Image (cartoon, rainbow over all chains, first blue to last red):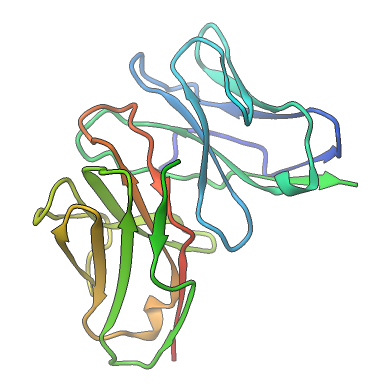
Length: 111
Length: 115
């Protein structure tokens, strides 16, 4: 089972920041938070990951709360091409490092 | 950039046919994975490999086999395709599975239809 909870869908106006929340209240101290997205009919695309500090890359920013029980993915200036399902994932720390995707958040960018 | 490629984007086969799905990665990654993705069921791991000639079963290996003769290539084989194997098949690779921080990178997917 996925260890994360996300809203099933969200809308965001084009050009605005899209803030996607994720709850992971049972996360262990050495587990990372990963975000992927999947555009229709394509393979999942890695976005960003973090442990406890906030992270930023060319695609997005990741804000992790101090207690690590939730996080927010921020797409600073959403475009129509950001329409996708966004998955928040907690990575288990063992040799069998399969990824367990939950249902994700379907993000609609509105023109 | 990491590149994971899959041999076909769309494939249509008949029941009972032997099907090969090929995956190639160009980043010298040790680990490679095969998943299938179905509506309402999410991603499910079929097989994975940590090294050449090594393979381990995932959650749903029945009806599938794999081959990893070279580090960059991981093949998924359906010995006798059945209609319940109609699905989107996704290949992924990662540098090493020994640390939880290793990112998996996915290919574009192969949508297989078995008639």
